[in-house]
Image 1 (cartoon, rainbow, N blue to C red):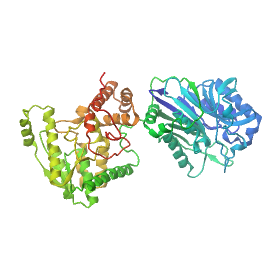
Image 2: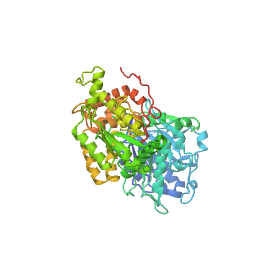
Image 3: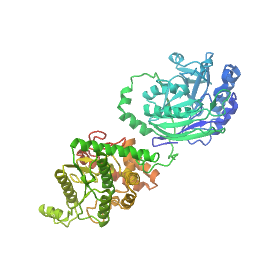
Image 4: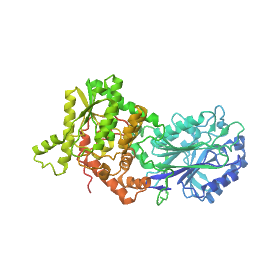
Length: 622
């Protein structure tokens, strides 16, 4: 399965018999039928089994293995790329090799470079390292085919798809063949392994695989031998791992006595995007010579793609180790604010409290920072500023929140002030245009700034990353502050943080207040009954778009396609979401250019001074 720059791969640990190539090939053929992946890899020396020991010296085993490989090619039911391991004899010398096959054609053969020969491993007894032979032998004849041999990069014609091969111990070398292949263009590394098991080795192995995928800025597919290998001296567990860009996608280690297969979905666009963005990876290109030969192949794209696991609709929100994630984000935001308060020698913190999520989070952080600084909570000044669109519900929520936190409350009615301002500029005070709405936001900011001057304090900004992305702020209004504590936190993550703060850091009464805030539809309340998501759509979908754009570099058609997959909406609605998001995103860069300082919280940011730099006058119109 290969579609829209996603490719499905499989790591297969088959049931086998040691020294019985006919049985092993039969099992491989059965596992290849109805296989969903476009590339499938079997373990090291899987045709014979890894633990044949001195049987590798026997001509009968080598002859039978070659015969069964020919049968595998002749009867191969699989239309994808097949990778398997077998012994290879060249001029009377044995090499531990990986065969890369497309239907009945051998695309290439890759020999093992690093042979373990310590403790329980004594591979040099039977096999020879490839380092010498690959210098003089680039093609070999095998089963009447002339086959590329050595360090190879397999490339699909006219696409991004490319991969290389490592065999077991190669991965553990200080500079592995896969590292060099990645620097020469291979997006994925497939490792055929027979890695034995003992206490704690699984964790070490997984950490190594995931780290290789991070350092290579690519994917790593690791397939290991299972329990049907000989247990005379050591035990194999069938530990298979698929990782991409520093993230483990799936793994299994079931000690299964039956054949086992795992599938993983590799995002080739993510790999290409990370490599373009990773300056250290780019700087390393061409500094090390893998001496790799390119081998081209064709792989038929699929009409569509079925993902192995459901897409996370809220990818910014932690799903595992929630408390650990919460504690880290809280520490980042609180310490960022503490540092800024100390630097400014501020005696107070001014927060505009609307009764909505963002100002709730900002006020909670301000209170925590004040406590850690030994500042009286009375020096945290929460300000409600009701105007034309303010509801009694949010006003009450703001007041109850501030009372529970024991901060200073300032309730400043803005209605008359804004009316006077509108009259001053010749506005009728009735027409609900942009001036009508934005005058309220700008008046509120002026009040907050002047209060900060009066109280030797700083205005704490509340706007989150989602609002900043969409430009859902008023320029020189709520867009401006002396420090924006929430700018690095998307809306869906704000919900998570507010809920956790109430549950973990404050008393039970605050949980009820926060629950009310969480249930209240989001609104800027610049006109009556104004609901944000009626205008810009659901924040979950907008945050999903932001995630795919900033973390994966996806273009608009790909994001729309993924929204359909993730949320189950129709294509027209998905297209509307994407079109609207990017129309706002590009047109509102001028607001981001004037953003106040803000701490980075995630691995992405919209700061115009660091993570995301773009001209304000970019024109994306057709």
